Length: 91
Ligand SMILES: CC(C)(COP(=O)(O)OP(=O)(O)OC[C@H]1O[C@@H](n2cnc3c(N)ncnc32)[C@H](O)[C@@H]1OP(=O)(O)O)[C@@H](O)C(=O)NCCC(=O)NCCS
Image (cartoon, rainbow, N blue to C red; front, side):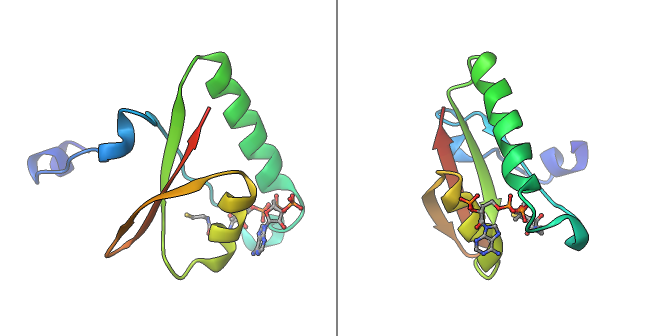
């Protein structure tokens, strides 16, 4: 992270309104059984308890499964980038 900062890394412009950030990566054998939804529900409930106003994430344009998942979880597309999309959810 320190190296990234010195390379000029800047946080997402969406981080003010959606300050939390997440990654979720289940192994293939754990996918499609409701575990992603459950993990997300626990994580989002804790963010709400902490008073966090929103959460943002990045996803590749070709990751159709993740795109469908995030939309089912209520995320909306915030911005399109050359590398993919940023999605956000107000809490
Ligand atoms: C994306 C991921 C987190 C979803 O978790 P999951 O446990 O497979 O998803 P769930 O079984 O909990 O599904 C939750 C909802 O999303 C939908 N969904 C999940 N994967 C989907 C897919 N491939 N296509 C369409 N819908 C999908 C389900 O239909 C379900 O809807 P419902 O609960 O309203 O009926 C998981 O598959 C994963 O880790 N994939 C590989 C890594 C990855 O791509 N991570 C995201 C990087 S940005």
